[in-house]
Structure formats: C-alpha cells, structure tokens
Length: 167
Image 1 (cartoon, one colour):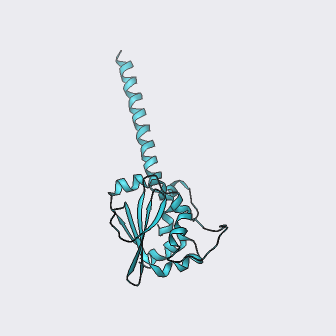
Image 2 (cartoon, rainbow, N blue to C red):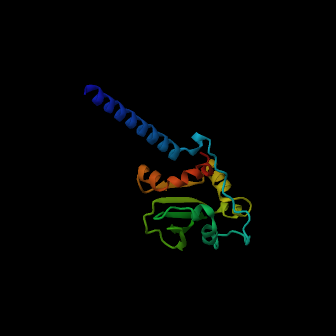
Image 3 (cartoon, rainbow, N blue to C red):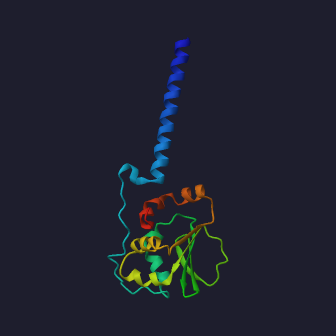
C-alpha cells in the first residue's frame, strides 16, 4: 500500500516539474522569441500600391496602413505625438483605428513621441528602420501608463517588433 502512495507522489512531482518547466519555457519565449532561434524580419511598407509621400498631414493615413498598427491587440490604446518645432501633433490609436486629436486628454496604455524630422524619412525607409534610428539618437520617447506586467501581457505579440527599437 505504501509503495502505491509513494508511486503516486512521485508521478505527481514529475508532472508538477514538467508543468513548471513548460511554464518557464513559455514565459522565456514570450519575453524573447529569439531564445529559441525564431527571428522576425523587419516590417516593411514595400509593395504598397499607393506610394504617396508621408507628411504630418497624412501621417494618420500612413499609420492606418502600417502592418505594425494593424497587428495591435484588441483593446490597445496608444498616442503618438510628433513635435514639429514646438507644435505637437497627437495621433490616437485605439483598437487599430487611427485619428488625429487636438488635445491629449485621454490616458492611453502607451505614449510615444518623436521629432517631426523623421516623418519625411518614412518616404525612404520603413517604420522599423526609422524607429531604430530615432532610438539610437535618443529622439524616441516611450512612456507606459500601465504596469510592466500588464503591458507585457497585453502587448506580448508585439515582442516580435522589439528589434525595431534596437533590442
């Protein structure tokens, strides 16, 4: 009888350890997919049928067509602020819908800001390349209004774009 109980306990411990290992692997993969050799190539805008110049006036249209914005999770809330010599242009992205807003009254999950000089660069390179450049020069500002755990969980699918920020 004791051998049967001991055997059940051993199997329970083995199963618990396997579940723990699977959980650790899942968390590591969620944080850094490249740990397991998965490499995601940069997102490009090439192949677009309409190739109009990106400006502050049509930046919201550019964002609507961008594959990064299209892959935002349901319930996402971001504000992208572009500083043009002291004048701030705010673009609200909520549930993949992009709109220009005059005042930033809303408290989004994430606030991103950068100088307007990079908008014209979007005509030459994709958003990922420009984001890397902005980040390396210290021109990209990123602020989270939710705790890190919630941010990582909600935007976990976005970890594949971390290379766009140089990570």
